Length: 323
Picture 1 (cartoon, rainbow, N blue to C red):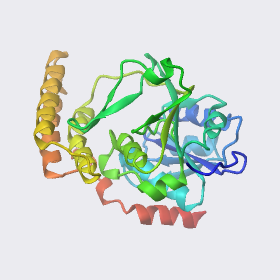
Picture 2: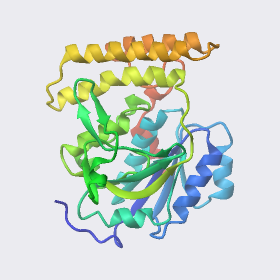
Picture 3: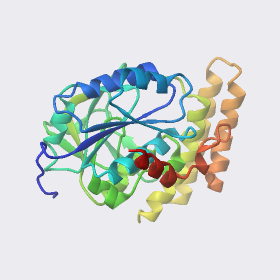
Picture 4: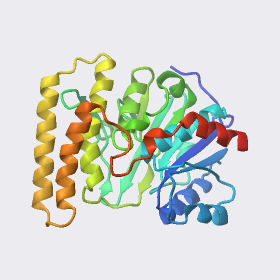
């Protein structure tokens, strides 16, 4: 059980990762600035946006720090860089979030009330489709968490429940978690990076999910893109290796069955939608995901490139020297 800190004395930095969504980013930042418990710092990690994001930030949010990366590193690379900076700068809490979410004004204040319980805190989330059901258990045959149909713990009257997964859409992470679990792995690019990070943290400390709606995702659900099809299948291989190294009894045979099932369901989903220019690329992405996962080719998708060569230590170090 961690020591009981005083929420009034903890220094908290919000780390917001963005890429070409300046309008959504503005809403996220305004919600952070409106917190009843004021943040000590807000860091925007810009994944080399080309939509005018830097100019918007300079004009509308001069109080916000901006770490601009030299290439698009995905959410995983952005959180790796942002959490590294916040940790090295000595912040106690790192509040992670994507650019398409907004948080209620009391959210940080509520989360800090649970600091005596946990070093890794989530709250409930509302999406355009309705409340997100996030309580889950791990299915090691698939190297993935399997969500329950309803929030079973909250329906039973629990104030919070333990989790073995993470979600960077609003997670409050104490610096002790970084000391125990390191930084998120940028090789995921996005998808499963936060899920796996929460799992690794749960092996060493208590990760919790609080029955309080404090996060709102503004982007509605979208049909899977070429990138989603690729990463959804490729990153399973990386998650499998993490779980195996953590000591779980992973079955290579069952995992191969899962990959085949995921590939076939992806093919059906692609072919059942209206054929278009992206259809062939999406089918190819599924096959590439299997091949690259099998060969251990991680990082940005091959049609993006750039992120694997970034020296995060050098980038973050240079940003710290700038002050």
